[in-house]
Every structure is written in C-alpha cells, then in structure tokens.
Image (tube, rainbow, N blue to C red; front, side, top):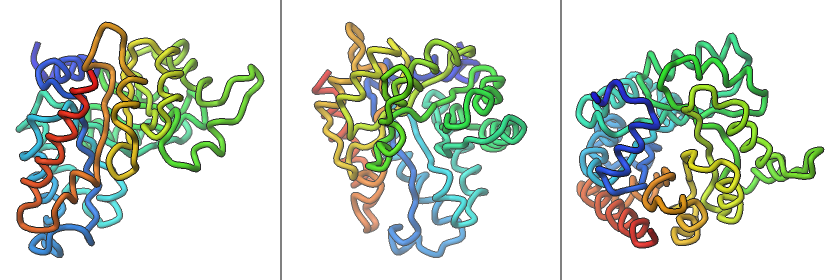
Length: 278
C-alpha cells in the first residue's frame, strides 16, 4: 500500500514496526533559542526544523509541529514548507499538527481544511470541551487522525479534567469513554494523555484498548519514561500504541552550530530508553 493512501493509524502501525520507535519529535521553534546563525534569517525557523528532522528521521514514529510557535512569528508559510518537506522526504512518518482546535461545527469545518488541506497534516489535535459536533468535521476527512485532548500534561489540567461527573468518574475518563464508544466513527481517533500522570495513562489504556495515545511530557516536562511506557503499553504488543513526544529537550540540546547532531544524540538516547522498557 502506498504511504499516501494509508490512514493515520496505518501509518503509525507501519512506523512503529519499521522504525522500532515510539518517539515523536515535536517542533516548538522559539526564535530566541535558535542557534545564532539562524536568528533573524527569513527562513530560519524552517531551516532549524528541517535540519532537526533530517538528523532524527530514522529514530521517530512521528513528527509534531506546534502551530502557535509558527503563527506567532508569522511563519505559517514556513510551516507549510516544513510539512511539505517532511511528506516528500519522509512519506512513511506521519505528521501531527498540534493546534488543539475546538469550536462550533461550521468553524471546525474550516479548521479541518486548514490542518488537512492547507498544511497537509496526517492528524490534528483537538479540544473536546464543546462536544462532539466540534469534532465531527475532522472525521469527515477520510483517513486523517483526530487526536482528542483527554488528560493533559500541564498542572492546571486537573482544574477541570479531574472533576467527578454524574457517574462518579473524573471528566477525563468520561472523555476516554466517549472517544472510544461513541465518537470514533472514522476509526482514526486517538487521545492525548500526559506522561506526567502515569496512573491516569493506565486508567485510560484500560478503557480504550489499543487506541493510540499521544503522550507529551517526557524530557523538559519531567515525565518518567519507565513509568510512562509501562502504563501505556498494550499487552502482547510491545513497542506500539504510544506516540511519546519530546520537543524542547531534543530541539535545544545545543545552541551552537552542532544543534542538529546534538538533537540526534538526545533523540537516540530517548528512543533507546523507550525501547529498553518494552
């Protein structure tokens, strides 16, 4: 099957198998932290991310550009160029646009077009707070991944996600049940569950079965690799089921001209640490 005809989940399954990796490299390009030769360059953000991608592509199961880091710098054209480059050079590695969209259906139609048609992403992150009609427009795009926020890695996530609802379960587990039992009409829904809460990862895994989990929070946010992998693993299927993201720890491993090589070292160390648990 041609990589361009695969669904997001098929791409993931192939990447987990061929790459032997559950690591995802996130692109959060902060202009203040770019190597000095790239600061202020017209396409400095693109060049930085491209070189990181080239240095780590054989170590990852996915790439995840974070939309706000590009948009705040008026670098949307560089984001388009980056995703185009990734899809041409590494067609078997899925690209997740991390934009956490969440709005009424008619607006969500356009956010879906933005993610999948303008930028060409294979998947997009979305916020379920406004309900299913804000998620449904993304599911109309055949084969595209829709990654729903469930239990996020930030401390403030507990303000709402841990509130008990009428069933007595916390809200994040209710989201996991809805995503698995009612919303997943396309078969391409995944969930975001932060590495900073391994006990919650295990509870979500128990509900969603083999549904893929995007897990941010290792690296700079301090999530424990051993606890994360054990909590999110699929019984009998080691090395699958998780897209474990690291951004800043890899991107900014060095501020010098060796930034790409340094990023590779950290990415390989992280990939190997994930493998060692499985």
